[in-house]
Image (cartoon, rainbow, N blue to C red):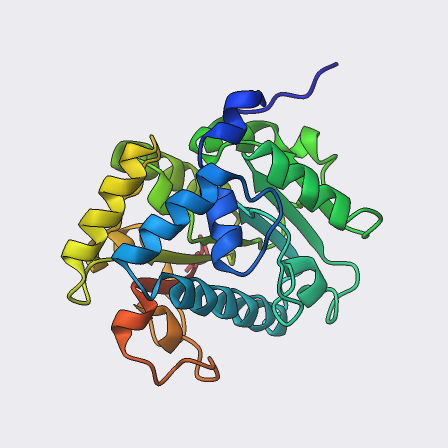
Length: 281
């Protein structure tokens, strides 16, 4: 039986002629897997508009590392990474399973990715790692995926225990209507005590024009890109309880972030981590 792909685009020659958000993110972090001309060309044009784009990407990656360790320290042993992208090209900021397995070798990590090349590389790099699962799916089809995820992963994620969800630097690729529906379904599906980590680009730090130009360049490449303001990011968590300092510029969420002293414009994105409250008083 063929496994469903939940809206992941088919692989054909045109895929390599069009830029990919996953491949661009990989390039910005110093990676070079599958860097096709369309990807390098658009990355160059994006960086010409926002010369801090690469640093912002690295700030986001460091936040992701610190968040995985933060959640592991809080006892989370189940992780769902939405839009995981390519394997990390930076050994100082490895993929989530490498980080959490230092604390809990039996931890479960489920990676979800729509880019077939990124998905294949991620599976290959994690081959043989215990408790690691990869799912090919577009997170714009998240409700359908959540309905089937138990069967797809053979019950890897237990619904009677909290799950830590990463939605880092990925929700900007979803339209407002689709985003609201997907996140509402996700929050309802997750058990009490679960955590949701979000990072999201914004123009709130005096960068409205820059973000508008980035949006235009992505649109030219037929890629949705929607930076959002603080209130929209706060709404992504519903009534969940904000942790730590609340929603902050990405570099300022963790006290030990290496770029914590950088101006908020350097992050160019908001970060938040929230926990689903208990259903019982």
